Amino acid sequence: MTNTNTFERALRLIKAAHVAAKTIDGKGRCDDVTLCTGYAEPGYTDPDSGVIAFCNWNTISSYNNATQKRVDVDDIPNRLCAALEKIGVEIEWSDEWAVCEGCQKAVRTQADSYGWKRSYTDDDCLVCRDCVDPVAFLEELEGEENKALTFDNIDPAEHGYKKLEEEFQHGLYGGQDASPKKIAKACRKLGCTRFLFVIDDVGQFDLSFALWIHESEYDKVTAAKLDALGTKTDIDPADALKIALQNAPVATGGGDGITVTTIDVSTGTSTVKKVTAQEFIEGTAFKR
Image (cartoon, rainbow, N blue to C red; front, side, top):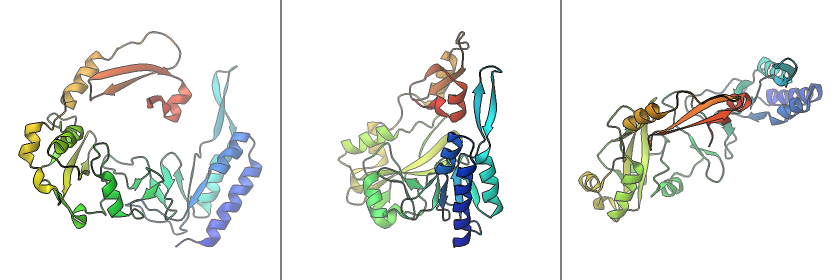
């Protein structure tokens, strides 16, 4: 249960920090603080206060051309973080968390372990797994090779779907070359459109998934029929990774910035580009 007093104190601290901020960026950080009332993320326990805050709590710095070094210019985010913690607010980071638009609770948007699976959907708006309508959500996943059910609290069997008794794997350990795209294409050729994928387990370099088919079309598909039509990637991801690494440039020549190499295991290719230190720090270096 949320402690109303703690929530109100947190709001006052944020307002005071906004006034005390030395820079426009500092004031902007204070405006960016998000408060929510508990976790919707599996495996997390609500703090005693019931209040969670997330933001970018790093001290604001700028680059000094004269010294060619970054210098701190506003420590208000860090000070506000410490003050909120002191009154019992749980602290998280805004690049890892978001708020469910249904229950207003926190959901993790970045992995915290190799086995992490998403517990929300964000097609139209961000909604946690507890606020999702299971029937409508499963129907949205039907026929989609680029989407899959990752929620442990929704059982397709309870909503008219049957699991094909074959486990599929995709990963980098060799032989893990099942392709959702090929499987979906095969299902359609067999006259089946009411199928969906469920991710069962996630590892550091692989995952296992299952094919579920609505009972109205279940008899159209068998593992043997799928295999005959083809369910594997054109190239084993493990082999593609090896080829891409072998072909990746060892040196990229001169120029300022940080060299970033990106591997595409679906094609066995690699791309190299230069990014600024700030792009690397902000995590935008790997965005296409």
